[in-house]
Amino acid sequence: MRPKMYLLPTVFLLSLLTSCKNSDESSTGGDKAIAIQPVDSSTVCISGQEAGPYQRFYRPQQGFVGDPMPYYNASDKKFYLFYLYENANRHPIYSTLTSDFGTFEGYTEILSSGDVGSQDEWIGTGSFIKKGSLYYCFYTGHNSIFNPAEKVMLATSTDLMNWTKQPAMALQAAAGYDRNNFRDPHVYWDESKNAYVMLVTTRKDGKGVLARYQSTDLSNWSEIEPLVATIGTVEKYGIETDAELLECPDLFKMGNRWYLTFSRINRDEHRKTFYRIADAPDGPWKICRDAEGHHETFDGLYLYAGKTASDGTVRYLSGWCSTGQTVNNNNELPWAGNLISHQLVQGATGRLYSKIPEALNSKFNQEVPFKKLKNVGVVSESDKTYRLTAQSDGRSYAQFNRNTSSVKMTMTIDASQSSQFGFSFGACDDPNEVYSIAFDLTSSNRWSLPALFMNKEARNGGTGKTELNFTPLTVPTNRIFNVKIIIEKSVCVVYVNDHVAFTNRIYKMDQNPWTIYVDQGSITVNGLKVEKAS
Image (tube, rainbow, N blue to C red; front, top):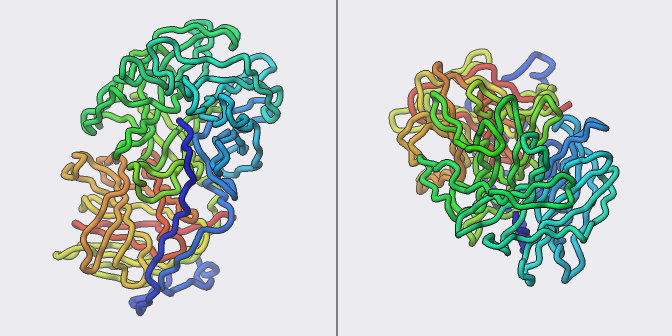
């Protein structure tokens, strides 16, 4: 991705500081030992600036994660999560390590940005690969005062932590390519060519392409035919792809299929990480299609610049969740934020599914008490089972107490009698503003397909709702949804049936009450459990 030469705004969300009377309180959750623990039953809104480190959705204490470049090192069996460090510092590359994506360690600069006036005064995204005993980091050198503004550059290391820049390697765009947009090199070994291949994000003849070069020694590169941007038109989304840059590409084999991932920065609702599928690394690349339709994304708008790494058994996708909750004046979400990683699972048709990493899931194993604070509409409860039926004039919901630490909420929702339901966060006081995670099982929304939405809702006489995020939703035949929601500070990731991941930034969510709601028909919620990490 092109380095962003601006400071991230500090994000604040002020909430009303009034209170309301609790009603219809009932103690819920767990055995007697859990039930006697104190639960905060207040509903006054809490608002404040985020403080302290993130444990599950990694972020450096004094800055932010931009464009992850994950690499698995077989020598120590750890994933090195290299990333562009955003802290008004021209994006040096830093790293943190993990063995399982449940815990992260380290905070280390491994490649500094260049001197003022140098080609790599700003550093852009790249990739890591090993040949023999030497590690190679191919990265973007960016300086907007130069023509070309961007070149592919190289640093090498013997231990992944101490790197030496190799200034003799400075690959610039060949004739016909966009000289000032030539970035995000991704290098992989191609057995069919018996050579290394490099993908580079650029344009040719006004169209977004991935330029390709090949080498046998990682030093001398020759140009080969590019991959074009129009690798499958996105019919339902209606996106014009020709001029778009395919940022942060990745190419890998999983099973007997090849996958190409890339992110599109085209400044509208489709700013996501996409994938295409092929039977060979040269393509042809197609959108994955099966009986349920076409599938091409891993998450919503809040996971960007996703790239992958595998230990040979499990593959993970890592991207970043913006610090922003809404778009800025450029119609973009602010650049950089928290590290978000999903485990990728391959289906029988080749389709890729996003699920919670097993280690992250198992970290949350200490049950905490919860309490239903209030009912609105038709809500019944029996032994951790909740039945909610929409009112004739609108929503029914059950309000639950605030969570004061990072938690995982788990439940099963039977929606065989409903098509519209979900969760709302920031449901404090008499909520005139909440943020909802909405399950829409219909095809009557503006995307004409079942989807998860994140909406800002103005209630109690407000002006309706504003869509902030969406991702397609796979609806099982029985319409039963197994849901896991991981919450840490203002980051909320929803996992559904081990098939769908939905990342969101919700500042009002942190330490405020929440609800389960239904807007149409009836739902039954079973096995509601709230757990924190031990």
